[in-house]
Amino acid sequence: MIPYPVSPRVRREESHLQGEKRERLMKLAAQVAAEQDPKKFSALLVELNQLLQEKEQRLQTQAKAIEKPTPK
Image (cartoon, rainbow, N blue to C red):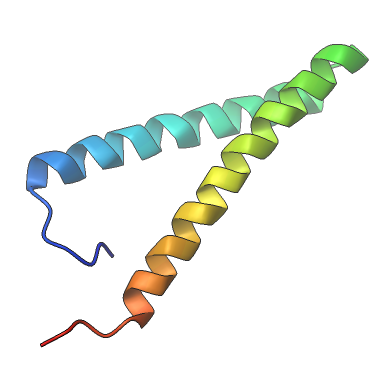
């Protein structure tokens, strides 16, 4: 939940971006599982790890926003 008013257009754009990242994350996971070349495997893992860290940070930010009471 976002703690401030956001236009529906912005929400759609954020949702679209998250959908693209989710799709990339899933594709990377499949590539990592199938990759045989150690250098390519390592590069894919670095990118996958970066996306997972971004997701973790986004989820933590959302959780903090939900926990925080809104000022009256």
